[in-house]
Image 1 (tube, rainbow, N blue to C red):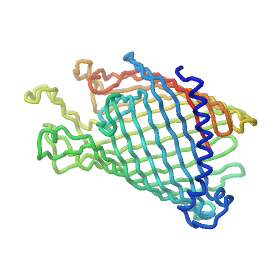
Image 2 (image 1 turned 30 degrees about the vertical axis):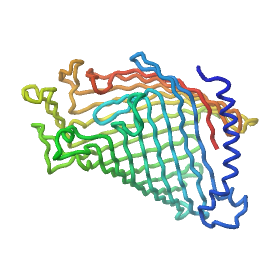
Image 3 (image 1 turned 90 degrees about the horizontal axis):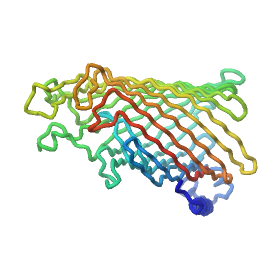
Image 4 (image 1 turned 45 degrees about the horizontal axis):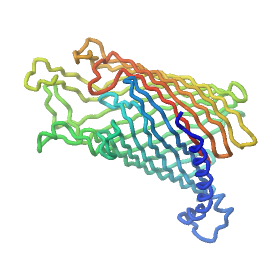
Amino acid sequence: MRISTLFFRKAIRGYCVAKKAFAAVLPLLFLFCPPCYSITDKEVKDRIIPIIDATAYESYSRSDSGSDLWGFNAAGIFAPNVRLTNRSYLLPLYQGAYLKQYQVVNEDEGNQRYSENMTHNTSLSYYYRLTDRLSAKVTGISRLQFNNETSDESWGTGLYDYRDFGAALDATYRFRQAKDMLGEFFAGFEYYMRLYPNYRSLISLISVTAPETHEKDYNGYQIISGYRVFTPRYNAELKYTLLIKYYLDKRLIGDLGILENDSHRMDYFHMGNLSLSIPLEKHLTLALNTSATYNTSNQNYYDSRGTPLDWSDDVFTYSYYDYYTIGAGPGIFFRYFIPKMKNECVVSVTYDYTFRQYTGRKAQDSDSTYLSSDEADTINTVRWSIKYPLAEHLSVVVFGDNTFSGSNMKYDRYYRYNYNLSRICCGINVKY
């Protein structure tokens, strides 16, 4: 790989400098949280809990088109949690990433391949433990996503760039079910507004009095509930999520391709997850994740087949965005603590299988001819990773994945349904 010894030396030197700098500014961070004055170093250490998990790495990715892409990537979490009292915490969080590698993201209309993207997610939570069993948290949320389909695009101009702004409220009730079993119920509600600043409806591009302009903008209302159980023999989580999307400006499409001005698009996304973690022996853990989703939408689709003046070949699809998915995947994790490094070595291999079936959308041949069968997509992904410690908070990481997607949708002019992607990465991880 193209990562030289110089890269690792610079990374280790940068880590040491960053660690000293963080230790120097740590007392200053506490000045923003009451009480602000006359505190000792020990009080700062006890009241501020810094959480840092960052990775910088070089990646090589390859698509089935035969093109290669080298890129420098960085991703991390910074959360200087502040303990206000024995029962309350202030939890600021920043999660960001810059990725220069091939990746395919499932959008409503179809799968999009990106070569570069960037995310900036921030939140501020106030956590309070009401009783020994019951706790609650209120959170303010901001999410920014930038996607570039080609390397020559400039940031902030991507068609699928979006911004989220919202708030969430959740609660957790923990109780002991048996001597060695701990149970936990959790529930939450989140509201956010998602805006696509660069996405415009086609009709708004040709008409100044268009009935809709920002057709992808929506209000999201999300409800989450679930149950966790912790035992020496296994850990498990069962979770249900309902996301309701109310589109602010998108009208329904009628069977003649005419927008219905008195109705808006609404989607209902249901997801159920079951995850299980079983320790096989001291260093080996088996994990299993399963999921099922069901999306319903009142939105339809009208295809003029590129001949807007000839209605004879037009195709109307009712409930174009309705689909369900089934996913499952095992994983094996090896962990070995190295006392000299005060850190652990971790090796993992996971496999993910996803099957997506549309219930109204017909598959198309490579020449765009509609077929009699509904669109069905199958995605298989194999991931592997190795993490080896260099110091207490510093590790070298090597990881990669291979994704194989197949579909009876052969019309790939605008979106990608049949593709293979491979990726291998190597870099440095800092965890504190």
